Structure formats: C-alpha cells, structure tokens
Length: 398
Image (cartoon, rainbow, N blue to C red; front, side):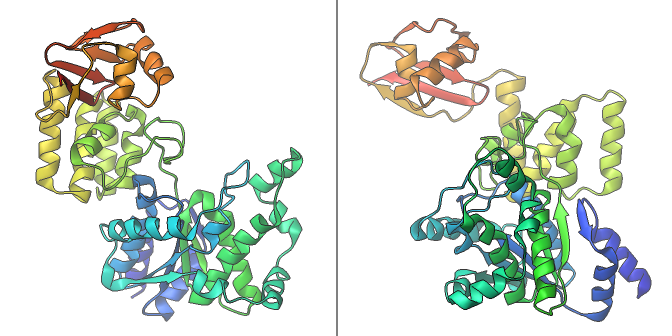
C-alpha cells in the first residue's frame, strides 16, 4: 500500500507548481477512500482555453484515481471580480452574462472531466443567504494586514490606486466556499496560490481540517510572452475548429514546444525528454510542433480531424496552396480602397488595424503582397485576399 501511495503521489505531483503539503496529502490518501477536490470556476468569459484546461486535466487525474471533483461556480463572486493580477478593479457581471457563460462552460468542461465523478455548486446558494452578522463573523477571521500582503493589493496601495472594500471580500468569500463543501484539496493556477491559502487558513479558523493546496503552472500564450488569456488575445480555445486549433499551435514560438507537451498533452515524461533531446540535437522544430498540434487536436476532437487539419496546414503553408474551403464575400462595389474592403468584409476590425496590417506586409491579393495603404481594388472577377497566415477570403462581384 505504501508503495502504491508513493506511485500515486509521484503521478499527482507531475507538473505541479505549488504543493502544500505532500505529507498531508499522503496522510489523507491513506485515511480516506474518496477525497473532495475543489476547483473554483470563474465564469467571466464563455470559453475554456488550453490554459484553463491545464488545471482541469489535473482534476481529471484525481477523478481517474476515484476522487470527486467539486466545481464551485462563482456566480456570486463573479459580481465582485477576482482581483488577482489586476492593477484596477474588475467590472461586475450581470446575472444574465453569468448564466450564459455557464451554459457554454458546462458543455466544454466534460470534454475533459468525468461527469459521473463531478459535483456542481453555485456559490450564490450560500453567499446570497448570509446575514450581516455572519459576514462580520467571516471578516473577523482575517486581518487587513494579511490581505495587504497580497502583491496586487500592495502595488495598488503603494501607487495610491483605489482598492474597494468589496475586493477584500473576494478571497474571503472564495475561502468560505471551501468550508461549505468541506474541500480536502483545492486546485488552481499558480496565480491563485494566495487565494487558495486564504481558504486553508479560514478552514482552520472554523475548526475544520485545512485543505491541501495544489497549483499548476500558467500556460504561456501563443505570443510567447504572457499567460494564455482571452484578454491578451493569445489563447487557443478547446472548442475551436480543428484546422484553426492546429494552425494556432503551429504558430507558437519554438521555445514553447516542450512547455506545451508537458502541460497540454498526455505524453509520458520519458517521451517529452526524448523530444527535448531531439530539439537540442538540431531536429527541425516544425516536425515536433506538428506532432504537438496533432496530439492536442486529437484530445479535443479526434485523430481523423487532427490528420485532416495537418493535411490542410501543409497544403496552405508547406506547399503554398489555397485552403480547400474559403469563405466568399459578394461585393457591390467595383472600385474600393483595400483598407475599406478589409473592414467591410470583417477581415479586420477597423481601418487603423487594416492600415497597420498592410504596412507590416501581412495583406495579399491573389498571392501578391500589398504594401500601399491607398491601394485601390478593382472587383470585376474573383479575388483571393489573405490576411496574416491563416485568414483567407474570396471576393466576387455581387
């Protein structure tokens, strides 16, 4: 049994950033058959991307060992807004926005989690019923000094930027969620470590066994610089079309290949070390990136879709052919500035963005790069516009 526990711990520790504490988890695994593993769900956006999937995949590992995933939907705390990593106050969400986002979340979550071992909780079911004296009781368990130790609060305080009282309540309400569901463990991204610690400390104050804290590394986005986030437009959604997903993965910087293999695939550690060795010995990163893209598209779609996406990618980018399917736009104009055409067709969101893209050399007409922002397009036959690496559009006279 001890050997089994050591193997289980080794398995669960894989890719973990913070772990408080391993000894406590070992003791709980020996004492309890089924652990309650909490994950708070921030419903501020409608899509799950590969970055958030990193934590969901760790949660699935616990499920595969027989434990229960306890998903706490932050429909109440979303009205406050998580201040983690924020230099200013987050905007509040309406009930309608939260419900709409959650519908999409539920569908996507079970691409990763086992539905039979998943429990859903909405924290409004207890927070909205708290009376004034109960909120005072929770608040009395934590000091302002401890809250100000948090990096983002401290930066705002030192820079004379406002911190509103309701923002101090966010980590306390999130911590109270752990008390209500009696969490054994709470998972999160590494930027959530402080919030998760508050849960651990508050449980002690309420004479409960403190939760174990386990965080996962943040996945770097497609820009190669910032964490993956919709806010930074550097994300890959798990419901994106296979060809789009494949293309985005092929666009990541070479130095992220191993990072993505570790956090986004089911590859064994020895396989990843072999990939790392090949890169160091000069193997073409493109080949390993293609394997990475196939692995990820297979996880969220199918092996067949991954192979189709690879064929399409090779056709367009390796062999410089046109995609098999290109959207069509019928134009009533016969003579129009390229800048206006790019906006009218929704290829780019604004004229300023269109001008910037043209200046950068990212716009092609029938395979010819256009660098003149005043270029006039004559539409008397089919024209193929290419913007960036993956956007194609046929324009026909309408």
